[in-house]
Length: 200
Image (cartoon, rainbow, N blue to C red; front, side):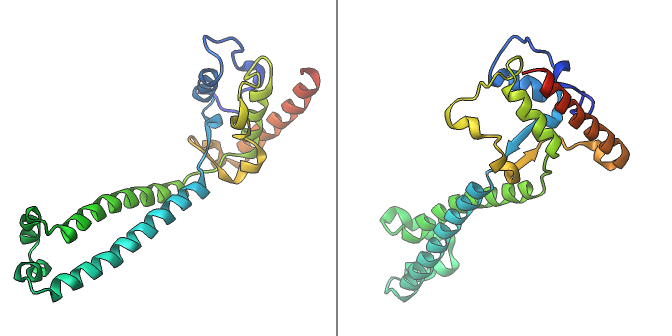
C-alpha cells in the first residue's frame, strides 16, 4: 500500500462509489498513514477519574459495612469476615448489603481496569507526522477529494487545536531511515506548495 511519502493528492482516485466518511475510509485504507484519529486524552482521563472516585467511595462504604457486621450481635454476620459462602447464602434472608456491594465493586473494577488498560495502551501509541496531518487536511477540503463533507462540530475533528491529541494507526516505517523519511517529506511539502497554487 502506498504512503503519503510517495502518493500525491492527484494519485488518489477522485471518483469512488461513495462519498463522505465512506470515501475517507477508502483513503485511509489506500494510504494507511492518513488513518489519523483523536485519542480523546482528556475525556479518557476524566472517565478514569470518575471510576476511581466511585471505587474510592465503594471502598470506604465496604469498610464501614464490614465494621458494622463484625460488631453486630449476629453470629452469621460476624462470620462474613472469613466465609464468603455464608455471605452469599444468607443474602436471600435479606442480609445482602456487603455481598451486593462486593458484586457491584466487581463490576466497577472490571470497567475501571479495562479503561486503565486501554489508557496505558493509548499512551504507547504513535503520533502522526506533521506532513501526514497536512496531507489529510488538504484532502478533506479539496472539491475533488473530501469536498468539505464534514458538518457542524465534526468539522473541527482534525483542526490544529487537536494536534497533541492525534494518533496514527499505522506509523511510518521509513522513519527508521532518516534519508528516506527526509526525502519523502521534503518532496511532499514541495508538491503541496506547487499543487496548492495551481489548483483550488
